[in-house]
Amino acid sequence: MKRSLYDIISVAAIFSYFIPILVVLLRKLWRDTFFILFAVYWLLGGLINMPDLLPGFSEDLKSDMGVIYNLLDIPLILIIFYYTSSSFMIRRYVSFSLALLIVFEAINFLIYGLNYDALKYSLGPGIVIVLIVLSWEIVRYLQKIEHSNRQSAKVFIYAALLFEYGTFTLIYIFDYFIPNSNSEDSFLIYYISTVIAIFIALGGYLIIKIKKRVEEPMLQMQNLMDL
Image (cartoon, rainbow, N blue to C red):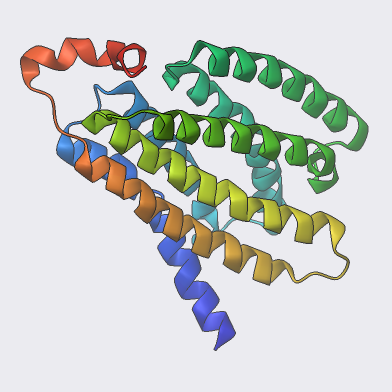
């Protein structure tokens, strides 16, 4: 019974990664940098996890892909934050933290090689950095008296990621610091949190108003206007 539940949730989670990019295409949101970048971020997550559903991939190959993805995941999301945030202070914090994190990851990789031990000491600080940025963005939103439609849509994306990375914190603790923890339970929590996070994010993708064609060239300037 538990195995059947795991299989169903894992398939649902992997396919849910592709929903944001599908909504972007259907709603023609590809000219909005914020929404397309986060949709691509989740798309990459789906592609990385897809081998779990396909035959012909060895466990060693899937393990190596998982390690590489986890090494690149947090730097990638921080780069997206840098290019989509309207706050100079947040962009400055992200650029400084990203540089330190990349150096730290490189050192761990040289010491431990391409395996999950290389992630133990870099994932923790990386998760904390991401949670700080997400909380910072949400607090900035709550401090405003009035909100534009786009700002409200963006906060759904931040809330989804906050939930996803918050859950990832628990998985990280169980995997690395609690002896004899069940890896299948960790993956089940990971997949469930993914499904929930994607559906939270869909709120943002669905409520954002589609701009008229004459306004589309201005979409690249929207982040600077959302002060």
